[in-house]
Image 1: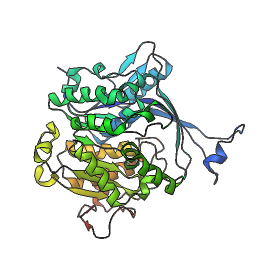
Image 2: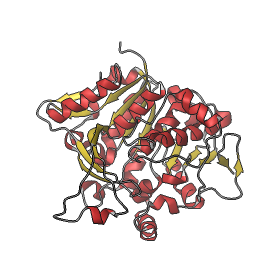
Image 3: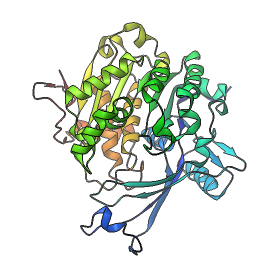
Image 4: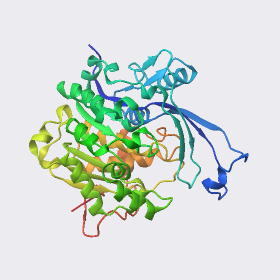
Length: 392
C-alpha cells in the first residue's frame, strides 16, 4: 500500500527560468524591442506550473504531498526532478519520467511593476495521460488537485473526458477533487475548444473549482471577457469585475455541478461561493466540510498588503492556502483568509513558492492584524467578519 498523504497534486509541471530584469521605469515594449541587448541580473531557477507551485506551497505549509508531473529523460527533466527532491523527501516519488520526451520549460519575464510575460514550451505535458497516475497513488490521498488542463493537450481534447476519467477514479475511492485552470491560447488549438461544453463535462466530478475569474470568464462568456479586456487595456481584467458579475460566474459554475467555487481576483482578492444542495456538499468525499457553515455561503477576502518581489505563482499559492484550510477542517471565513494570506506571502519572493512559510507563521501574521488592500470588488453593504473577510 502507498503511504497515506494529504494531497496528490497533479498537472502541468515545468522548469522555470526567471532572470532578474531591472526596469528603470521602462515598459515591456521598451524591453522587448527587436535587435536590442538588455542588461539583466542573475536568474532564479525552480520548478513551475500548477503541480509544482500548489504542491510545494502545500508542502511548505506543512502538509504531506506527492507531486505528479511528466518530464522527459533530458537535461531539463533531470534538473526538474532534482529540484523537487531538494525541496523535501517524498515530493518527487510519483513523478513520471518518459524516455524520449522533451521536458517542459518556461522563461518568465517578470520586471518589477509590470505584468509578467511567460515564454512556455509544454513539451511532455502534452503527452501526459490520466492512466499514468496509478490507482494506488490516488487512493493514498485525501485530496487530488489538478492544475492547468488548458495547457495539456490530452486533458483539453474530447471535451475533457480524460480529466473526467481521472477525477471519477479518485472520487470512487472517496478522494476529494479540486481543479485550477489557465487561460487558453486564443490563437492555438486550446482556443478552439468549446469550453462551456468542457466545463459541463468535467465539473460534476470536481468538488472544488478554483479558477481565476478572468480566465473562466474567457472560457464561458467570451464576449463579456473581450469587453472587459478592452476596458482594462494592459491591466488585469479581473480587477474591473464587480460583485454582480463575479457572483453570476460562480452561480453558473455551481449549476454545472461543482460544490465549491473559489475565484481568484488578482490584486482584488479571493471570492467564495458554495452549493445550496446538501447532497452535493456531502458527496465531496474525505474533505466534505461541515454543512452548517459551508452550505450556500458566500465570502470575499481582499488581498494582504505586502512588498511585492514577484507575482509568479501567486494564484497557485492562494489555492494552497484555501485547500490547506479544507484539509484542516476549517470554516469558510478562515479558508478565504488563509487563501489571501498564503498568496500574499508568496509574492514576497521572486519565485513561486519560497515566500510561503509554515502554517503557524501564516496564522500568526493574520492574528497580528496583517492589513488588507482596498478591494473594489467588495460592496459597501457587505458585513466584515472577525477574520477580516466580507459577506452579504
